[in-house]
Length: 571
Image (cartoon, rainbow, N blue to C red; front, side, top):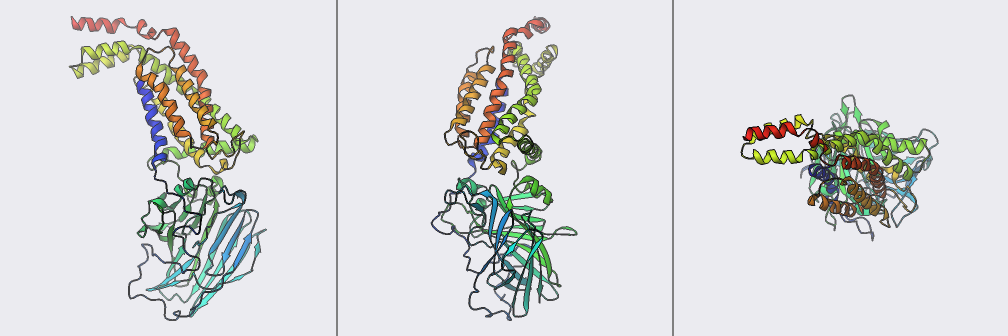
């Protein structure tokens, strides 16, 4: 492997890894009380208005027939809906969702370790409603709703019915549940909206509760994701406190996600997306970057007052999200903008194969990663073989290349002609060692994101590793990965002429990669360690072939034409 190939691989590895290290990480919100900037559950929901709705001006007011109708706060009860998958809680004050406990997932947060994961934080405004009729704005956050029944066990299709009224305006809601789905189908009707209809603002904020051992990493994954033509992500950490960030519709869905969980609202009509827009405002915090935001989406209400939408509150299980459709499986985009088109298919295929091997071969995920690392190396064997042999041919003609470069250094056109002639005479492709290495790179990048973000690896233990989605607490796997990389490079340099730069890379690369991977998921380190070890036999075989050729066999077979041509032209 020559210097250019090594540098190309190094640059690609840096491109794959460094962005994850240099993204600004928001510090964790203090545990001592409610999250900084969280909305007080006793306060009325604010009403930032998306682009599709005109913002109220100074002369705007609450409808006269509702002014002063409820001077005191309504008492709050929580109605719980339980199924084998979840326990959802809804407040009688405003009909908000105040609890989403996911029975099949445990919290990794040290303060709640072992309990079922609860993804809705205190002060949530999820499903909180604000009605905009003309220039009047009516927050429903403090309206007392009557909810029937007062508890619900979901063994089949089931419903909650909510109703509230103030003055001439009445609101009726129906929440429909299924036992095998995290979706809630919501339909409703507002009486008294008038002939011009109105807008319904639906709360999505302010954030998702922390469920992970690494709170900083979970906060870094917090994002607002919207779908128009494709999924677009806005990190909560990128918001500016007090400054609205607006995404204009029509939108098919709007989601707030953490590393492994998501809440989303869907609304469709005959033309596609029915959501007019969404506005997010970073909430005040004592930390450097926001980890919460006031998020409201806008849904048109026709003169009839009827509307419908649905909510998803649950894990980011790829198959489940994919069944919903409308590209909801891309709510956790793999890769970076511009590269997702290439990386996503490989990531989806890799994740599917990992899950298939676990479920159908009944293997622990740790063993799946071991076999997967070996399988990928076997599949890439022909490409690596071709690249390494092309590099050997290129190294063999290096003396002639240097001779030609020296003779025609002042004549670029002649230099180019002679170089092409040399490549043709010795059947050397200068790019032959690069493209076989480049083809697998989308797979390698995809695996990086899959192992870092797949919920299937969350909580999966293997040998001394308590969680394959978390770093190795003993740092054994990163060290093994670094040592295996050194061994692979050492074997790969057998039979090559002395090269100070290559010798430096032999020691620098493994050390650098070991330090980079110390805090990455142990499953990712396990895969790369196995992959490196599985590559050593191929490197050993090609190194022996290089030694037998003596590094100059290719030159020795066909040196005469080029050498004689150079002498004749020189004479």
